[in-house]
Image (cartoon, rainbow, N blue to C red; front, top):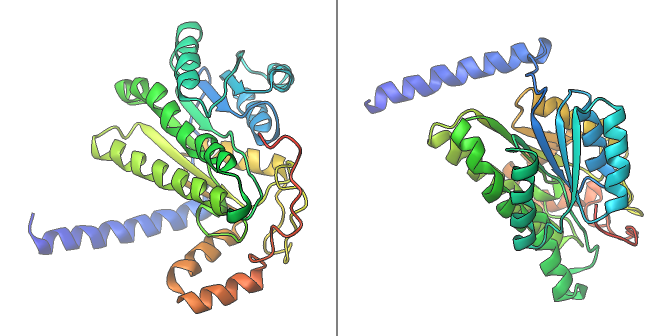
Length: 306
């Protein structure tokens, strides 16, 4: 195809996709049926992981829960069963350990079957300035927040590719789109999570595996305890998010094959501005939004694993 025809094709498709987006602004997208799908959620013992398990349970899915907190998983399993899950299985798994991820993944495949919806949710935050963070904590942050995604994809993606069916969900962060003072290691891990998910999603499309979908979630701070003490300068513009609201939005994004979910909606504008403003303007905007002082009052929780 020559340059002229390819250019016309791009222009026409761009117009059509804009019209399609405008229509979907008023007409809700049809939700896909996930009854019977095997959904694996890492970091399912508390917080957003637990809430997502309850939401997925309402669609009669088979749930597989991973966490290092067995008691937390037991409670999540109980809540999921009472909310309609067809089956619930839970396994202790330290996602920062590649060998353990592979071992437990093999156990899941033997005892439950192939995972068709993978939710990489487990995450930790040190909450320390870069020069104050011990090397061991930086390495742990990277192992849990991004390297675990590599190992879970390696374990469960082959079956999705073979069936050309599945869904990869990455719970990243708005800190994976915009750098935040005091979150250098966390931002690095979340930027990596976004880039990794985007790249694998494109790789799947390029190889014709368009039945394997990707959803990348980038929320602002969520009120789960992970970022206790952090304050937002403009709560109307950038509120500390309600966990139930976030969980419901994530499941809706999965059901409608939404690729990017930024929360709150103001993050779409802020992320866009970051890419078009010059550096001095971006710094002024960051100071205005309070990005330089978000972590000044950070306490977190005693156990940083979510």
